[in-house]
Image (cartoon, rainbow, N blue to C red):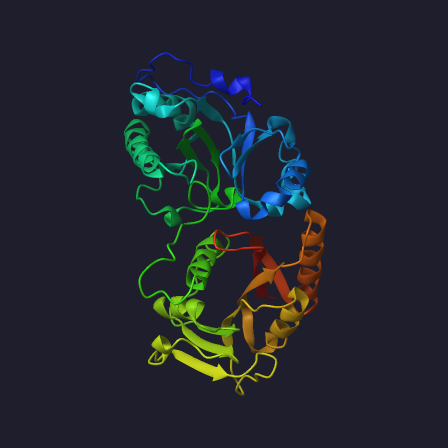
Length: 379
């Protein structure tokens, strides 16, 4: 299905020149770019229908889909919205093949300045549209485009390269470039569900010496959490349930936290000399916190039924400080449909609420499989 023809009028085909920036009035999206993980490829038709799109909605590669403008903001209130890892209102687009466009960076930058500079975003962030072969080219293209855009825009509130220095509630101009062209829109990182173009920060799990991929999962989870609350201070005390072999533990220790790790399986021996680690070799269902123990945060990535895991978590709520954080992996190995998944998630969230936990956010991260990560805090 061809992309909305209205998008092709956004830039035109003539060379744009530097002119006085003019306010063009409120921005109105011509569609919504939504990212749905390949993990849920079998459910994508259900998800798109739930969002207000169709199976034939324009698709950009393996994970990005275009919802019609008619979907408006209502898609955010649907059950299917939980499956959207990242989203962007498309206020400007240029369907094209960038390698074939002469002076692509200059022409794109001029168009972006004319369209968005008067709206005063806190910063401009660019990135590749698709994680496929040839991404290095588009990473370089995106970087060059950002550099030229910053020359054309008035001074921005956030000037550095570090995306997480943004105010999560302030508008940012996100720009994605790829084989399908350029797509841009203004939205706060919290509304987009990520500080970076396309979502959360990618963290490699192939670093030599890495204990397990779980380390990247908790690192990504903590990046996501910054959308909703400040990072826990160094030396915060975590209680980790089902910690073996220690991938998440290692990441928390590397961030300067203290960890009480609980598991009936042994930890990786490389963690034996960690002075901030207290390993308790026992099943989480049998663990009893020491008298007076007070934890700043609790982490659960346990296998097994989601409600059973939450029951174990709630055993330790009295040992969690008021306002304390819970990062909980919602496992969904047998869920076969969008209603199944949202029903299980709803039951677990209500269970957590009866135990004194309030939901902050829940999302699907890059390193989640058939599972979601829930963020909660003790009331």
